[in-house]
View 1 (spheres, rainbow, N blue to C red):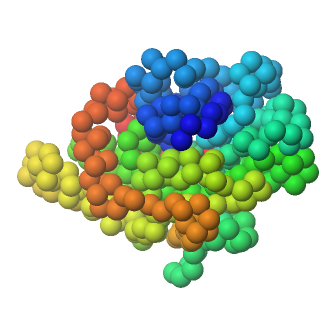
View 2: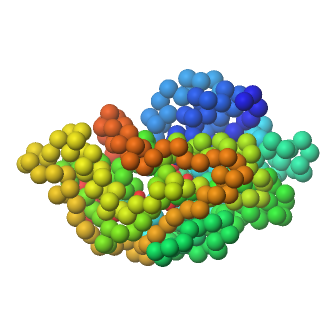
View 3: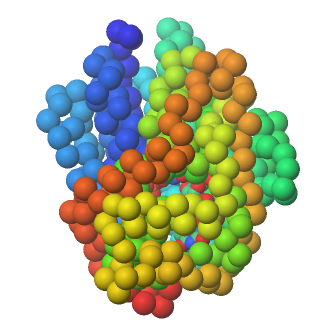
Amino acid sequence: NDEKRTLLVTGGCGFIGCNFVRLVNRELPHWRLINLDKLTYAGNLQSLAGVEENERYRFVCGDIGDAELVERLFGEEQIDTVVHFAAESHVDRSIVGPGEFIRTNIVGTFTLLEAARRHWPGQNGGEARRFLHISTDEVYGSLGATGLFSETTPYDPRSPYSASKASSDHLVSAYFHTYGLPAVITNCSNNYGPYQFPEKLIPLVCNNALQGLTLPVYGDGKNIRDWLHVEDHCRALVAVLQRGRPGHHYNVGGNSEMANIDVVRMICDLLDQRVGLLPDGRQHRELITFVRDRLGHDRRYAIDASKIKAEIGWQPAIRFADGLAATIDWYLEHRAWLEAVLDGSYQDYYRTMYGHA
Ligand code: NAD
Ligand code: DAU
């Protein structure tokens, strides 16, 4: 593929963003990357170690809500593609303090849309331009025991996080319909894989288990998520940039529904195999502790990914059992990364959530 693009990637130092930057850096030599990231607690330059050596890559530390900065980048760099990951992404944090979710996820997205609108007037020669907005399946609300989220499922967000993402999705759609902005929205299910911040279920459980801490499972542990390896997600995003139709949503999912308690047990069993039993001879499963449920906890998410499969030809390649084992191995091999991201602010957050650090 020799198509040239200049991408403004927002949030490229976060979990999915850094996996995307790494994928493009490896496999798409004709794409330039401008990574705009504020380096919040969730953004880490160490996740991109090695990438900065590439002359096609530039890092800019800044806020997507800084209109002057965003405006300047569009002009200086002749951006033709936006891949918008930057967000406050953790549901529990949105319950404790929604303000930053409104500022970054809604106002920040609006700031990017305004710059794109000004710099991409009309569609002349603009066929290759794309504003790819990375969204979530959580905007669709919560499923009962049956059914799947499709692109026509009505929005029904139920947490401050998902409401802020839904708002930003609506703004992006409005800019397509009103101004002809060549925008595409992807709504993806739960990602897992390398470089995920250890506040999310899989890395949190792995990290706690390695330290012999309790493994908090919310409610009855039977809430269901549809897990997708981050590499599969990033490949879907590249394919949507290349073949997605402006004005369309594409649901991206792993076809891999799991109850939380089963995911936690799988991680425990993998750790028993990889690092052996706990020092006192117990299995890692013994650390599992059922705790108070998340407020407004969505029961089940599951994606119908037939549109992206039929139109774009994408489908997940990594089976959950294989991807989870590889992910646990990655965390075991990258303890220095884990320690580096677990700074004082993480300890404070963890204390607020669970009462101990
Ligand atoms: P993350 O929390 O790991 O990373 C977010 C990144 O955005 C960080 O690098 C952070 O520094 C940066 N950032 C935050 N506020 C910023 C601001 N105001 N300006 C510039 N940069 C800012 O998030 P993630 O899990 O990688 O998610 C990325 C995107 O994908 C989000 O939009 C999220 O809603 C969406 N998404 C995530 C999942 C998932 O399972 N993680 C699933 C579907 C969709
Ligand atoms: O569905 C996509 C969404 O997936 C993304 O939009 C979000 O950015 C991402 O954070 C993720 O949201 P979840 O709330 O599903 O992910 P989390 O890892 O926080 O939780 C997964 C499930 O595990 C959820 O049902 C809550 C539960 N859980 C989570 C934590 C952190 C626990 O039981 N214990 C925990 O300690």
